[in-house]
Every structure is written in structure tokens, then in C-alpha cells.
Length: 490
Figure 1 (cartoon, rainbow, N blue to C red):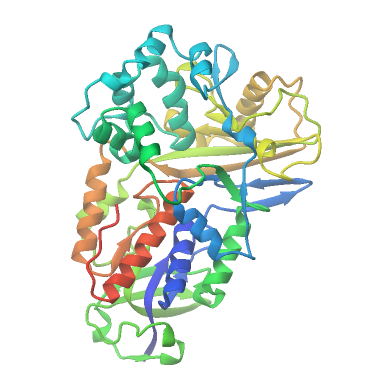
Figure 2: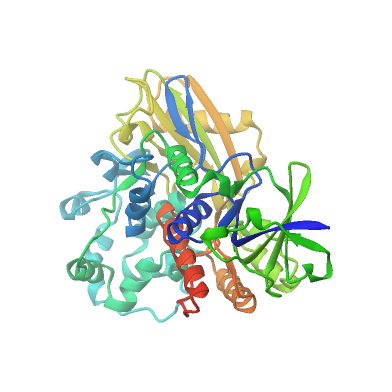
């Protein structure tokens, strides 16, 4: 006879989306359990401290672009504090013509910058008068060419997209990849007019729009999320994960109610539509029965997990394209290169360099390098170089040293710290095939009440996007629990 444990919600995955969903469910008094294949939470988020350097092996920063960011840190008060980047982080560099150029931050800089052609600078004055696009599937490159011109695409949008998505603006669809930019044109007919009118019309509390991390590194955020959500609600080192729906009624089982949700929620009871989540932990098979399952798995990880989703739908979702990325962390105790007075530098694809860009964490975050030193993160790969992760460490360092010495004006390549991290499925690409993916996700959720498919397969890839989605999923679960129809997750 197999024992099962009742929980209202099972959360699959231990990354930022899962952790924030757990936090919001905890706040609402909903019983849950989080299942993670690794030995600790955080997913790709991990802060390392080594020889005076503090670096991230995954995401380095987020942008305080949504109110949920402040809400999360408020719930973690006393355990984790938000750290906003220094003012210098507003300065972004773009490589053009064998040198770095600052991306304009105002009208005067926009007029004087060598990044854009004179024709496109003049054409920008006409942007408010250009007609709206009517194609919801228009690529980002097409929209920018139409409204701003080729040089704005090459030396502003292209490197920006490389920095965020490691993607190609010719392939990414604006309405999915940058929905707020798309809506500015649709609602106001202009990027410029829309941005001004939206700023004037926004009332009430607004996010700071500043770059942020957590004091001491993002692992502090992860640990605080786990602690406040309740460490007893997390199970690590799981394997052989499989989710079934209403199939355990054929087996002899006993419900261990001592480990059930208790006062945190009634649990699924004997609902024939309940989900049965099986996995191996500590060498033993365990079964959890739940009313809701939240998956934060990447699209490439869902095959073989959900028995009740038909193969055709699994194929469509798992077909989501990802960009590979290699991150090279370089630590210098004595910095002899260019002045690091910016967030970092991005490299347009038209410049034909072998890196995507360089981030300068020690320039805008506290205590990331020894005094007089510097911490750099060099990024390679993306859709420009799909085979990057297959290169040897030696070859990656050859590329890195050549590019960094020239672009950062270093007399020699002698970092005191070198670490290489490979991510074969780093960033999902919201491209022309993506609408079929998102429609399939919505279809699967509609057919399976209580199943929520989240993570960066939908709704954006930034840290603030993950926090927003987490709150939406928690609210959707709570509303469903109270039999109230809710708005679908984007």
C-alpha cells in the first residue's frame, strides 16, 4: 500500500518564478510543496565569492519595472535588502568603428552621437506622424526600420536585443518580445508620443525603473525567499518526476494526513481530477496529490513529465527555440583598462565581433571586486553563434582574450580570476513560431483545470517578469479555490 501526501499545490522547479509563487501562496495561506532536481534553490541564480570577487553565475541584475519587485522585497524585509545600481549604470556603451560610444540619454547627446545617421536623426522628428503598423506578427527589426530607420536598428535595438535575448531582431516578434513597445504604437500611434503621454497619465505608485540586485548578491534573495516561504515546504535532489491526473484510483493508497496541508488549506481530497505527482527522493518513491500543479520547467524539459498532455501538444511546446550563451567571468585585482563608468558595453551584430557584450558589475554594484580592481562578465554566443557551448574552454578563452584586450584597451590578458559557464538553453526566443507555442500552452491549461505552465516560456524573461507572473499564478490558484473566474496569465 502506497502512501500519498496531500497538498493544495505542487510547484515544479526551484528557480525565481517558483520561489516567488511559493512566497505569494504562503502569504495567502495556501498549502504547497516545491520540488527541485538540484540540491538547492535558485535555478541558474547563484552568487559566488572568491578571492575578493563576488560574481553571479546566472542573471546579474533585474530592472525595477513592475510594482511586484518592491512587493517581493517588502515581504522579505529584514532577511534580504534590494540593492539599486549606482547612477553610472544608466550609461550604456555601444561598439562602433573600433571604439565604444555612449548610447544617447537625451536630445543633445542624440544629435551629437556618431551611432545614428544624420538622415535617421532628422527622420526621428517625423516618428510621431508615421502611421501605425497593422501586423501583430511584425518583427522587431521591421517595426524599428519603419518608425526610426536602419541605423537605430543597427546601433540601438540590435545590441539591446543581443543583451536581453541573445536574439535576432529580424526573428523576434515585437508583440511578444517587447509587448510594451508594441502597445505604445498601437495605443498612441508613436513610440515618442506614447512614452510621454503614458508618463504623464500614470498616477499612483510607480516602480523606480532602476537596475537592481540584492545586497550581497542574488543568492541572498533566493535564500530569503526559501526561508520566508518555509524550508519545510521544499524537497531537493528529486528525480524520475512524473505527473498523472486522476489515475491513482486504481491503486491501493493511504493518505498520510499528518503531512497534509492542514490549516493551510483543505487539500484536494478524493477529487477524481486531482493530480498525482510521483518522484524519487532519498532513494524512495513519493507521491503527492494536489488540486493544482505549477510547472516552471523550461520548454525543453517538459517531455516525459506530464502523462496526460497529448504528444502533439508536447511537441509544439518543447519546440520553443532557445539561444545558447557562454558567460566568462573575469576578475582583475589591478585594473589597467578603460574607465569602467557604465553598466557595460553591447556589440551590434553588424560590427562582426565574436562577443555579444561585456558587463561591468563592479562599476555599479558594491563590493564586487577588491579596491582598484574590476569584475567583468563577457557574453558569447546567442543565435549568432549557435555552436558556442560546444567549443573548448581553451578556444573560448582565446576568443575572449582577443576581444577583451582590444575592446577594453588592456596591455595584456592576465585576469586573476577566470570562470566559464555554459547555458545551452539560456533564453527562449519569442519568434514567429512562438504564437503556436503560447496558444498550445493556453489550450493545455484550459483542458486541465488546475495546471499552470509558467516560467520564462511565457510572459517575459526578466526578473521583474518572473515576479509578476508568480503573483498572477498565486492569485489564479486562490481565485479558483474560491470559485471566482480569473483573468488568464499572458
